[in-house]
Image (cartoon, rainbow, N blue to C red; front, side, top):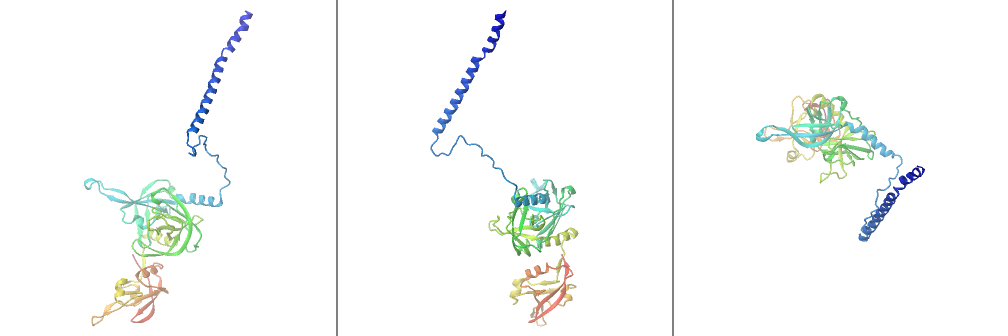
Length: 388
């Protein structure tokens, strides 16, 4: 009994040893085979191939605190992005055999939330000629525009959507009259129809002049180096405090892509006309109450500088100021009317100059006109009246 008890443990614990030795030998053999395989593989590669079987991810370098500029940019993006919208203009197309008319995307631009009543501001040329529009807010919720009001002369439009107030984050409005060349600006929008993008640059110049979609001059425009591409139109231009200072409007580029020169409508103009569009659905422009000759006709009649008055409209400011129209005398000869040379000291060389200067005034303003009447220069005052 004692012998069997002493031998039994020896039998149980000694039996696995050959298997363990076999496993170690197999593992060693496997390592040798892998190493030999790698050596053979490396020796088979041509010299200078650049391949390295030992290649592994590089260790990540630790970074310090974010720079002041980084923090400022991030803060601006987080503050403003909820106020930026995508605007898709829609065109109505007939289905098969003229049935099932549907609205399809025509173009994509940008816009921004003006107030929590659902008013979205964008460029007129973004929705020009469209049968409707869709507005996509920052949270990707989409709404049909229930109304669109436009002021083509200043390339502005207001869209109205029915969205919950909780989704509408009005942009912070700043000023443009005190901008300085060189100050940092941020441009937001959806370039090329992509999702929300922010770019940065500086104010490159002030007081530029561009042409609106209907051919009228827009003066006082901001020039910026912040990249503006197709799709950015209607998006906000901001200062370093995250305040709206302009609306991205145009680029100067023969290719249609950004080439370092972008333009934005000044916010002081936006803040003047947008409330009027929201109140009345239109902008009432200040007018003298005259019909003027086209520049080519005026030149044919010998007027090289200034604007020739063809007709004085009844009950207008020009009629009250007794401005003279062009007419024929008793002998049938053309008698030229008054030629407007300047308004409040600002030279008027052509009809576009006249419209541009009048746009800087409001209905009810009194202006001083320098006119040429039968060879004599006179100063007369006139009160501007409203006209759609």
